[in-house]
Image (tube, rainbow, N blue to C red):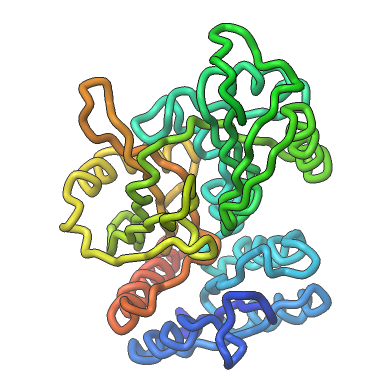
Length: 354
């Protein structure tokens, strides 16, 4: 028998909290479950409480909803994800599972999808400092690039990199390491001037300290027209959020922190984007090697031109760690979300019975 109770995990603190200490969309989600006949509780996660949280969740709930931005966890995500995995292994339905967060939320999903219709073909991943040193000076010599840390949020560690002066392209030669480069960070559009060598050393520090990789993709000039975020429940687009960068010179970031303007549209306003996504979406699951789509997630796209100078959509990132529900959508969206969660729990239960 299914226990009609679900728990939401939150964390204390963070810029995503309202005056009640919760995310603004948390209580609407709680009420949506209650309106559907389920009990929904909220627990705050702390590392020192992980065992108690595990035992309490195991005894009382059929599923959990993670509403924690991993960057808000004071000691990192390791113990939190360990707890979520343990709960999932005993049959508590995960929304979302750590594997989904890590696989889809990491920027290297762009590498996995580079041979599909989603990602730019000249996207590279650097898994070692040697790879980075060998390839990036050549890559940057050809055109402006965007360099991304594999994990992160709100634009931190995402850099637009370009030659600072009027140096002509080096064609088939790598840039000399003493070349001055202008680096603009997506978090707030601030600019820094470095030699290529010094900038690469800053990036290498991230690679070494985090045992992680960097993603190198072309800078797409049509970001000035805005980034298009698909807000999804499962495989169904629920809204398109147009994120227009600020009008400041050379601004390329579409994060709210950088001053971008967000406008929400119904999916039918962007029929070409929806058709493109629906035709190609199964490739995300196949290449990410996941069993199903996350319940609540987003996919961000930037416009580019194809060889016939027609519009095409290039994936810039995916997120399913802690997707915010815009206030404008609250009222109906969380009901659809709660229904999808309940259906996932019921189907999981039915599968076990069989």
